[in-house]
Image (cartoon, rainbow, N blue to C red; front, side):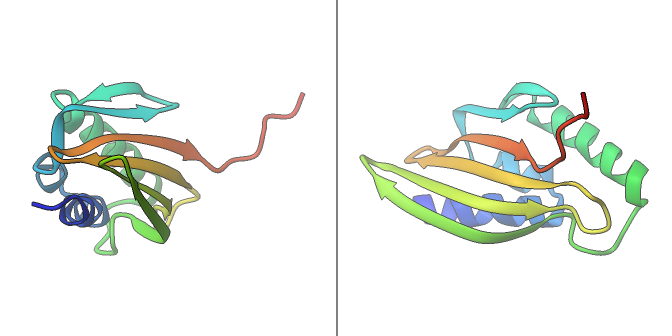
Length: 122
């Protein structure tokens, strides 16, 4: 599967909330960096995804809407790595942020998340 195909399938898994689809695109050395959950390996991804999904459902309930929306996707390939930047939102919640995704020949190498939120008041 090409890097672009892996990226598209990875995005599809997030949009539909399907951890199995996401895991099928991951490189063995995959690492998710989530400021709330820390660093997540491929082996720990399903547990991370289930916990995130539970948190989302506690806010909006179970919904038939897309689990996650992606927009403003920008990609660049350099030195054998496809890099993607995207804006993501969870419909029906205030949860949103940005993602930096790296894809190599073996699949998705990493994703670094940011959350869009106000800074706490001093």
